[in-house]
Image (cartoon, rainbow, N blue to C red; front, side, top):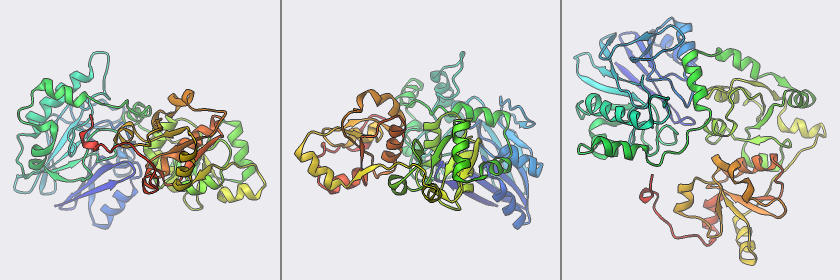
Length: 470
């Protein structure tokens, strides 16, 4: 028996490859499925089942395409109602894979169809659970994403409490926990950086698995401090439930090379968003006016979903040469399939044609310190509120990136203002959004809070994030 976690850091998502006696099961595959097929073929194995823990909200799974290419059936837990052919398993139903068994445990709470898959070894011993968004390491799945007119987040939290205590906590302490996500995912609020653990350790340290916890206490703690879910989540659920275009079709459309004139014409004709995915330092030095920066080197896919929101938005790409397909694939992982092409030759071709371009003013933390000592400055910290509360420049206002549009009335248009984040990635995203809305008097503080701290800029007293209300 082989069990491999295939972890994608950009999405903080874990897919799983399980093989026994030449038969393979894939759990929660990514949109680009060729690597799973290639690996199975290389090992002389056949993909027999595709298991989906639930209808995912934060990414588009590869289940539909993988099933079409391999003829392997898709397996959901009870109450799932996809609009394509699938096995809707019963609670406790078992699926044989070579010498091992995968048992379906219906664990509603994150969503009503959520299932945990229990892997039993060849001797019938419980070996591991693939818990999807039911149980994370250090946390549990948020219960607010599947609310309906007849079911509230408190109802879902109550279901989750029962699922954990009747289906998961009775399992042996040595059972391995393979979660659907890790730290950085918007599907939970307190996840560990580790991606594999034992159930016994989770029983000791996961706040949601306290033995003496009442259902009322659980509901309160699990629902407390939940940030609003990103706007694209329901659109991803719809795609995972109803189906979607083959990724090869998406890649073919999205990797159409456009010269600068063609690029400009398409942008103006269909009101396409120009998305620049290069490094932030390159974007600062020069970019197409009104383009939005979200670099591939950072938390690309989640920020695309949080800030662009409409998965049908036409997109044109500015990339480093050779990164066009990578950008299209990573957009498709979160359901953004309407990429119409990319700027052939990259930003340099735009400049070489003599077309207008814009820049961002950026200064070092040392220069910022000197200016701050000499005069009163408008400073906006675009980190999350918890980061801001933990430690910030005393005079700075918090304008968290994901809610930047809600802070526009606070930002001056007639005098300079400064923006920063933790390291320089998010502040340039914020700067690009603000410039696209006509705020051209901004100045980026290079290196963010790390550089600011090292420069000795006066900060508020540090508060450990672990002591802050989640």
